[in-house]
Length: 249
Image 1: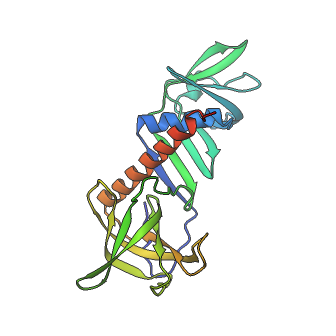
Image 2 (image 1 turned 30 degrees about the vertical axis):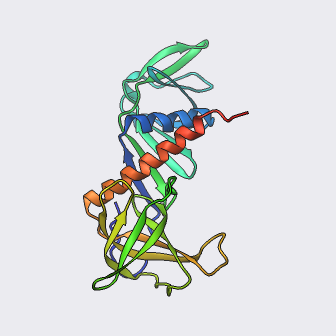
Image 3 (image 1 turned 120 degrees about the horizontal axis):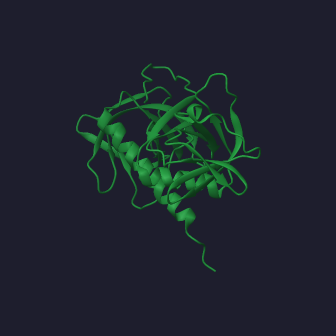
């Protein structure tokens, strides 16, 4: 998912992550509903117009889509139709699963089963998560043969991570490649990785001396990328669950 390997910084506008965890998919769609976000539907038929401004409802059986006119394309064109939405800087996309039309509040609604797969298409770095637990992840860099230095991970995505860089350590240059690093997430096996520096910025909220170093996984193994993605999804799922909890009086 992160094929950037050149020595110069490369711009990449979008990156997508497939989500297949059923609970995470449901939480993300429930958040779309409770946030009042509107969706669009792209029918399979090339001559059929897209539908925008759809309202999403969820229940135990799946999801229901409604719109103002109540008019829908033929059911054959709704099979494998694509539904899209935008929320918090990310675009979500999933296919219509087992579509059928049903009566709803005096009109017609589109009933769908819970999707088994959801694609999250996002602007670069839009879906980084900050560690919720402390101590959080850290990344161990090899400074020279036989010597290592650990840095706290400020945020993490399936594409890369950001590190806390103290003022006492000279800042790296953009494009610098670090080989034989190790991402350590508490309670999980260490993840070997190579990192390429993509951004060097002052650390927000600090006195200006410390820095935030944005890095990208360079040619990551499928195991490392999968483990990072699992951590991101689990952290996001916990955040979604927390947002759904009622606030105390």
